[in-house]
Length: 160
Image (cartoon, rainbow, N blue to C red):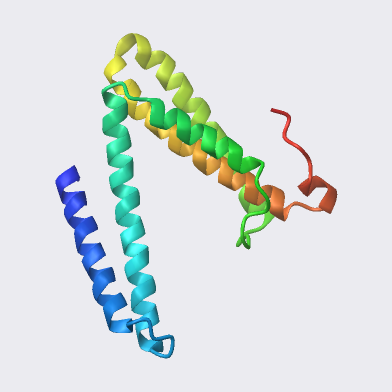
């Protein structure tokens, strides 16, 4: 999907959100509009996420990696934040996902080493993928810590 298509999708979802919010009119008693507003907000969030991924990939392909470094630093700082709001899974679920993202990062790092010699123009996309995986890893790690037992495990400081 191109940037123009994603921009169109974003504009359409914003319009849908505007119509839903207008119909609700700020009236908390208009319960029938709340679901439509929530759905429109979710669609708009997904459209923004899609276009951000595309723009980050495009930026990384031309050598702009500052945003990726900032995203990784932000993900690292989230590890020190408090407990995330209401984890929905179990410790084992989050632990499994942490292992999955850790392996994905290791594979991507290996691919980056290979591509740096054979096909350097693909490094941007790989760096973007690694940035995304690291953000997911940080969130899943935070959720794993929040669901860990006993309570002492939840309050361990990271080693880095």
